[in-house]
Amino acid sequence: MIEPGQNDDRVTRRERARAAHAAAVVNLDQTLTVVQAEHVVAHARHQDLYEEWLGARRRLTAARGLVTRARNSGDAAKLAAAEQRLRESDTEFERLTLDHLGEMHEISQAGAANLGEVFGAWDQKDAAYRAVLDTYEA
View 1 (cartoon, rainbow, N blue to C red):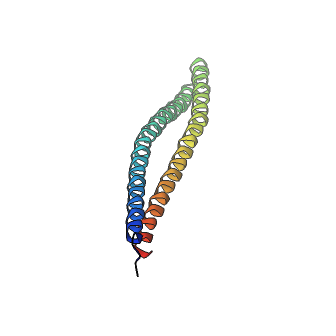
View 2 (cartoon, helix red, strand yellow; view 1 turned 60 degrees about the vertical axis):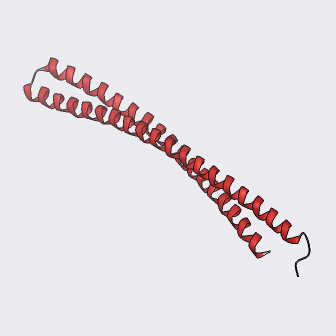
View 3 (cartoon, rainbow, N blue to C red; view 1 turned 180 degrees about the horizontal axis):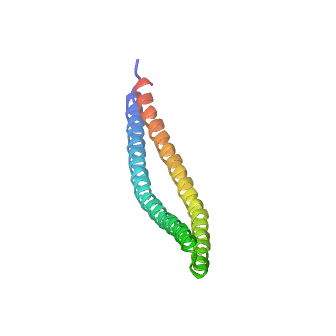
């Protein structure tokens, strides 16, 4: 048998649990919004890095072609200039490769951290929802 005031306490607990759940849902939505925005920025940066690297790769390939043509022509001055350009292109390509891999790794790590935030917010929402359900069982 329910004693006087006991039902009121259950309703109050349920209202607090619902308010906590609503706050957890808002927190999850905000977290997802921020993570999605950061993902868009990270993806754009990743594309920029890739396009810059691809340009360096194309310049390296073109420099290799110049060396081949200079060798075929037999002109020592052209060959020396082409080999110098190849060394410069190769140095640029290696530098960009290492720099970009480092930055892409940082972008990936940030994405993994964001995923952890999403899972944390999701777990808080689930815990708050279970607390609401518990008020019906008590």
